[in-house]
Amino acid sequence: MKKKHIMVAAAFLYLVGNLVNLITQEFRLQKYHALLEQDLQVAQKEQESLKGAIKRFETKQGVEELARKRLGYYQNNEVPVRVIESNPAQVNDPALTSP
Image (cartoon, rainbow, N blue to C red; front, top):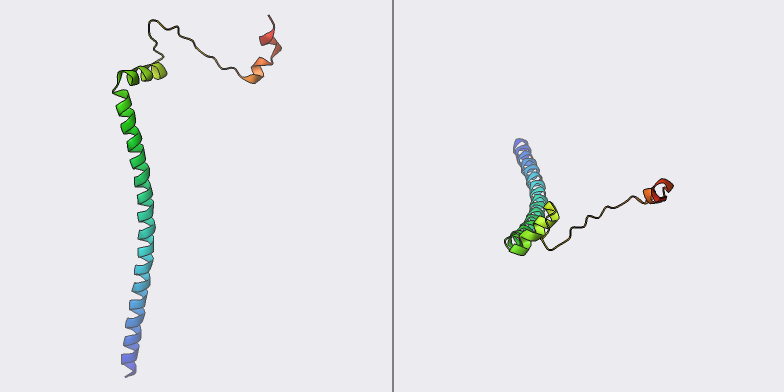
């Protein structure tokens, strides 16, 4: 009879151990699933943004905008102006401000 109680106790402990392991795995999988959902949402937002950029650059105005920004192109009737930003420390330098 004692042997039977030991076997039942051992089986119970084995089952409880496996149950704890399954519960732990379930929580880990839920966390991982939530992270994947967040990544998916970020990727979908980026995809929508890229689709918008593609649509914009399929138009003549979009191509002109891209050429102006990235390549510095301008139209024949326009006068190009280049803005050179200065460092505030350089503006206060007497060597730069004196004639």
